[in-house]
Image 1 (tube, rainbow, N blue to C red):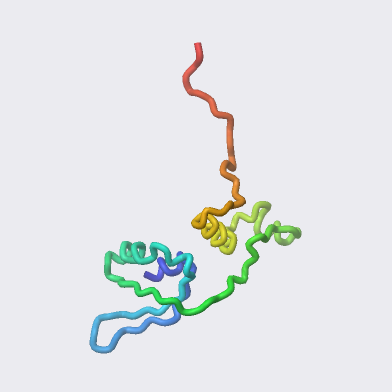
Image 2 (image 1 turned 120 degrees about the vertical axis):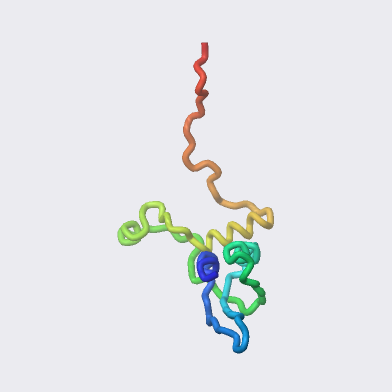
Length: 122
């Protein structure tokens, strides 16, 4: 259960055992965009033992620039030329744009090579 919440960028606020029963209650904060198919995944990972209840709590600003690219030597040394680490804000923005049918600035083909047939022409 903790792995699923962590994978979806959630934060666990607290977890308590209910008095007089064998129920363990976990309260966590999860971004709304990460909550899609959360119920199915957590039930699958816990073999149906976890029963999620999603409730909107609050708005929170993601403190990441979606259009950030490395510019200085220090940033290139930390993140590499392409900044291979995933930018969560850009990922969320692109997911919403795809879902709403808006244009997304992504390369469809990144490493294209010349197509060739394996059979020899006679």
